Structure formats: C-alpha cells, structure tokens
Length: 211
Image (cartoon, rainbow, N blue to C red; front, side, top):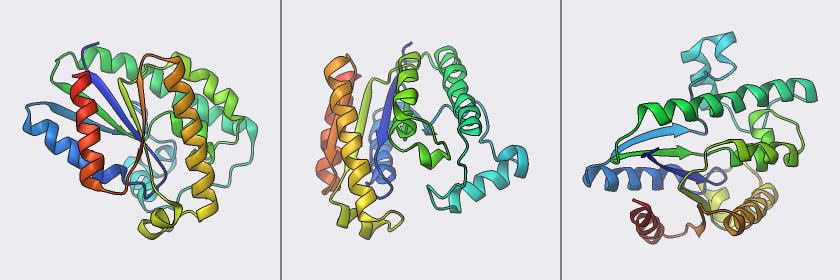
C-alpha cells in the first residue's frame, strides 16, 4: 500500500480540526492529494442512517453532544462494535485498492483508538481490553498524533466535557500511545497543543519524515 495514513486523536477541544486544516493546506501546496475521514473508513454508513436516512443522520450526529447515548446493553454494544469494526476491515481493503499513488495521504479525524479509550462516545459499553484486542486486525497508520492541552484550556474551547472527564481521557490516551509506541514500528506522537504554530511545525516535520 503506497498511501500514507495519518490519524489525529484527542478530546473535543484539543485542536484536531484546526491542525488537520493546517496540515491539509501544507500538503496540498506540495502537490499531495489529501483524503479526509472521520473516525473510520466510512464504507458503511452510520447506524442511525438506517432510521433517519443518511443526510438526516449526519446532521443529527453533528449537532448532538457526545457521550449522551442511552445504550446500556452489552449485546447491542457488541453488535454496534462489530458493525464499526467491519467498516475498518472492509475499508482498509478498499483503501489499498483505490489509493495507490505516492501522492495520496489519508487523514483521520479520530481513529480506532477512540473506541478503546472512550467507547461511550460511540454508545458502546464493552471492556476496553476487548476492544483493544481487535486493533491487531486493523491496518496500522504510518503516523498517529494525540493532541492534548490543560483541561481548563480545553473546557474554554469546548465545554462539552467536564474537567475531570477531560483529565481522565487525556491520561488514558497518553498511556495507550506510550505503550503502542514502545511495541510497534509505527509512530505514536503525544503533542501538547498550546501554540498552533509550534504544533503544526512539529507535525509537518514528522509527516515529511514518513513521506
């Protein structure tokens, strides 16, 4: 597979969208084609589209606050997880076939790590170790970036999560990325995103190293 895959992770307010746009502009100016995805390959539609239709489901997902789903069932959680996991499996095959140019770069705004660290966000209540186990069956991106900032700063940017939850999720992400970086050949970066200019400079530097 020639395409390079880059992922951005972090709680809402960490600055993922802003930095993705910075990276997108930089790469396009250098002749690369950037393909942006949210969380997963998106070969399969979000589950709510079967009820509301694709457009209405996407609109509802955009305006809905995260982590407020009412699911408490392990059985329906397993079905939901299996559906999204299937999207990764099918999607990675599709990506291998479709994108073969060395000028293609796929950027994910969130990735499979979200299901491991914050499954409640996807309305899933399953053990994190169980979800983590299946990461071995998914294509490993070339560069994975976790963005964080002090909880009070993130709360000012987006007050969707309380500071305690922000701190817990941030620490769990750091532990996951640290462990993955020790045991694998891919890159897992942890970046404190206070200065947009500094963060984007560091990220572009690492991206250039994998291209």
